[in-house]
Length: 222
Image 1 (cartoon, rainbow, N blue to C red):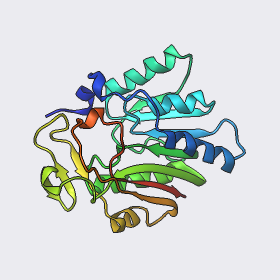
Image 2 (cartoon, rainbow, N blue to C red; image 1 turned 60 degrees about the vertical axis):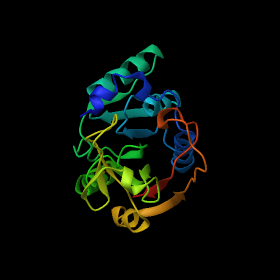
Image 3 (cartoon, helix red, strand yellow; image 1 turned 90 degrees about the vertical axis):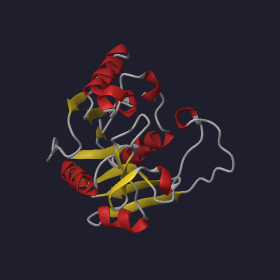
Image 4 (cartoon, one colour; image 1 turned 90 degrees about the horizontal axis):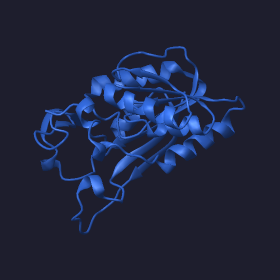
């Protein structure tokens, strides 16, 4: 069974380029808050592409991830570019920054890798870490994505564990619209996008595919 710490030793699991959506989210924060620099948390930062982006954009970046190798990679990446960020090795359920008053938090393709109880706990921690009016942008797996019979063993409703492949043993929780609205019931929903992509033909392996997959993209506000 692979762990995220092991996966981030393999370059094919390390994304180099930030998501354009994250860049645009930071620009939304810049237009919302007059403070400079902004304080932004890259939650479950992986190998650090968005932590680096936030720092490059001139803001105070914090990054956390369960993978020590991911955090080490992020630190080296920052140093090689003359950048700084506050980094912590931590589980998503760890309440690291209560009262930190972040202007924004971003979590890309990560929060769904847990059981629903732990995901709820993580979202509560994010809420407590934001300033009033602060925003959280997150991408999440969609129940419309892929074939259900290929998701692995269902360990609770809509949470599956794959038994083979690089992410074997890693839980994946899939959300329908009700699940999204339940998860963010204490938040104001700023943007809720149901991104559905249908592949007519697909012969490129997942890691090399240049096109998007079906997911939820969400921005919520405290």
